Image 1 (tube, rainbow, N blue to C red):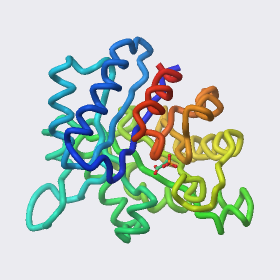
Image 2: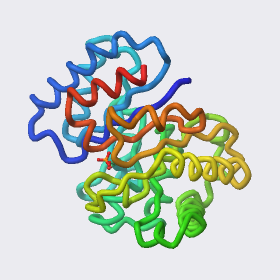
Image 3: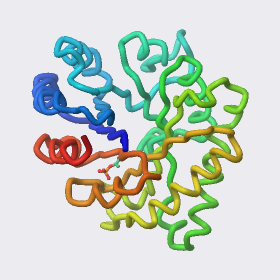
Length: 261
Ligand code: PEP
């Protein structure tokens, strides 16, 4: 089963030299990838161009792809500090992570902003990885409350996408990331593969019935590491993982890749 593993490096490493050396370690390993699974690196913006060039020079390292950790909704203009989907596409990026819970929290991103970003990315042909997931106080109220929360997020974040001609083009990927399960959330809790599977099946049902997406891909994210990844990936319905903390440790991420390809 082909999976997608996205390495969200967040705000690390501190230098381009470290980023390039990390890429080389993972890349060499990826040359063995005959599985069709995609390994996607999402570095800070400032390293994207160099890493994409290094990967191209190494003939693509066997299925390596690149993602940004954010994107803006406008194509060009007076938007200081922002990066457009077109710029990312022109650079050779394949995916854009949108609506990560850390951006919702620290950059005050609203569902309305996230919706505009998803639409802008898709219109440009950039694959959107939309992150959704409930906070701890909602999960404590039970599964039904968690499902309603995620349904509501999807409704707002995907508003209007039925009008886009993206059906069947595989441009939209959803990452179910329960906020309380993210390694830095401070809860110490990790979502079980069974609970992740239940929510992912629910999300897939919503996507096919409400948005006519025929083959939606839904990933799981939250404290995934080399010890627990197989518990998630063994399920056909879980199309891969979004990995944060464990993806910036080369040894650990190599093991994750090894278990995937
Ligand atoms: C994330 O931030 O997307 C994430 C899943 O982080 P971690 O793997 O560290 O929980």
